[in-house]
Amino acid sequence: EAQVTQNPRYLITVTGKKLTVTCSQNMNHEYMSWYRQDPGLGLRQIYYSMNVEVTDKGDVPEGYKVSRKEKRNFPLILESPSPNQTSLYFCASSRPGSTQGEQYFGPGTRLTVT
Amino acid sequence: GQNIDQPTEMTATEGAIVQINCTYQTSGFNGLFWYQQHAGEAPTFLSYNVLDGLEEKGRFSSFLSRSKGYSYLLLKELQMKDSASYLCAVFRSNDYKLSFGAGTTVTVRA
Image 1 (cartoon, rainbow over the protein chains, first blue to last red):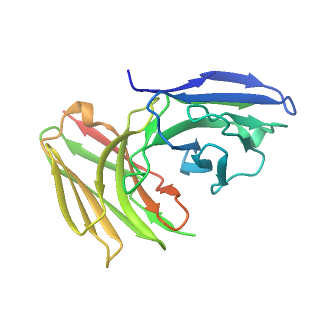
Image 2: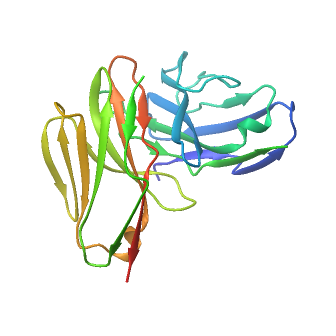
């Protein structure tokens, strides 16, 4: 089954404790992206990757890191989480070209930072 | 930067038609996308417009006017399962970013 998976689905952590949210897709997509979703603000892009070893900042990259060592995986790293990073996070992937905006989303990771 | 505006909420009756408007201002426009998101779930792709005009897909249609920076999503023969948030998104070719509006919550009443 074609899908995007994320782990963990739920995470409660404390300020300053490094964490990684994994994302993996089995559709051989070049383009992958991370979003956060907050009430009233909608989905905002954190980082995206056009292909292996190519990553770029989205609209809200501060406090986050990513890496793209393999095509299928695109982990999101919070080196020192803070309460304002409490949010619902989605990973997404898509094919290259004109339909790059047609993205397949993972199930989401709900993160709470206390 | 860019602005993407859509109404916050809409309510309609089962069997009726609802039109969700979206206006945008952006550079490097390369497509207008609509997504559906049920509460607690991930967004799922509904439709895509890159040229002016109407795209029809069953009960859902989407329209685009690039000169006006305007799109709408038309939901016909509304069903209770259509109660969800509908997200308008713009893809840019100059930086390959997909930017979303805040979403329109549609409530379908019996």
